[in-house]
Length: 255
Length: 273
Ligand SMILES: Nc1ncnc2c1ncn2[C@@H]1O[C@H](COP(=O)(O)OP(=O)(O)OP(=O)(O)O)[C@@H](O)[C@H]1O
Ligand SMILES: [Mg+2]
Image (tube, rainbow over all chains, first blue to last red; front, side, top):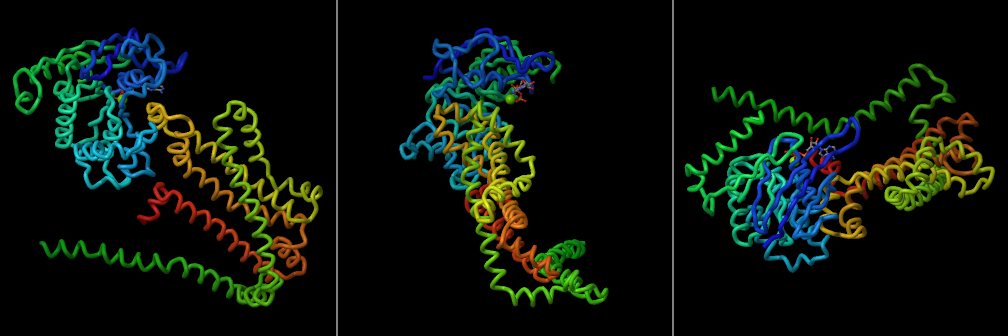
């Protein structure tokens, strides 16, 4: 089971004076252990900024981020984070890049053979283990980065548009795998996405974020049965949920 | 219709074939043509031999003096290689230290930038006055012309790790040493090699000019004496060997680069072309 995460009055601005950009907040949010929360909002509303603050990689200008009751003051190493731009290094193969996560943590990749094989199979990269990142398509790189972010079995996952560059079919397959992974071991997941459908399909709750400066306009409980397979997605309840969120964004003027 | 399509697609391979031919021969033909032009111009315009000798004469006279030219090539090459190698070893650690030390960044860094702007050759007469005609002042001058480009490129190299990768490393909790070995150093190598290549070009230039200013051996000295004796044919022969020396050093660095960072984008493009 993953950690609980809370933010209290968290806001972030970049720069000072005239060049100051209010990127996010202030906002409050409580995420229970094992929840799957989507951050949904238009481009530039501060989703990545919030995610970095949850990871302890960016200090809030105001307020505090709390994990399992303790205030976060530095980078959290117990999480798996997937950045918006992938963090594959060009001098290592796909497999080597996955190992890099372990090596940087002083873990022995040999102890993770089975897990790595499993992850690679999940994202359909079998046979590409020894390819360099530049030999992969953008979507394949993203899938490799997904493995890199998850290999050390983190119980909290922060994912910044992990499926953004994927084609519809692969995206569908990986959503399903992500969902079953979450249902199996109930990590706490925070997923940044542009896709309303994706948010509704995967999350227990959706944070709807307003255009810049991003504030959490609304937190929507998604009350649909699990697993959210094709049947559920065709259901009237699912469609209505998606339509309701569409309306919210139309009111922001971004749709 | 389908026939027409086939005919239309035909010229492409033919053009490619022509390019393949020219790819192989264009460069040698160009240089051959250049030498022929030079050779014939000297005769056609009856240019005096003591001003511009034809290539045939340069080759013949140079060949006659080849033992001395080779000895001087080794001397100049030795100065260039030693100075370059010392710069290569010392400059990267200094660049690293400057990148990560606040104090050095505000003291040695501005000093290095100023010294890079200074023509190092201007120090040559001083070094020769202080240290005499021997090997040492030349090595120091070569070292100086090689050192600063490598330092500045190393600073650029170590300072430009992407924010995303920096964050990735921090999120793993890896210490500075582990981060350096696994990520920072390999990520910095392509830019470090930019500095190395620049320095390799500077090295022979530095050695030659140092020899102009004060020496009794080496290709720089040889060129000076030959020119003074109105023997431009011998000077040209020496210049040819200097060029070969420069190419050899640049080629060696490029080869090492290819072996060390085959994954870098510059290497990839070349291998695809
Ligand atoms: N390092 C920074 N310096 C200055 N401004 C920044 C910085 N990082 C982000 N911003 C600003 O903060 C705002 C939010 O950025 P952020 O990357 O969090 O948006 P986002 O919601 O993730 O957008 P997208 O969906 O396009 O990725 C933007 O207006 C951006 O210009
Ligand atoms: Mg973003």
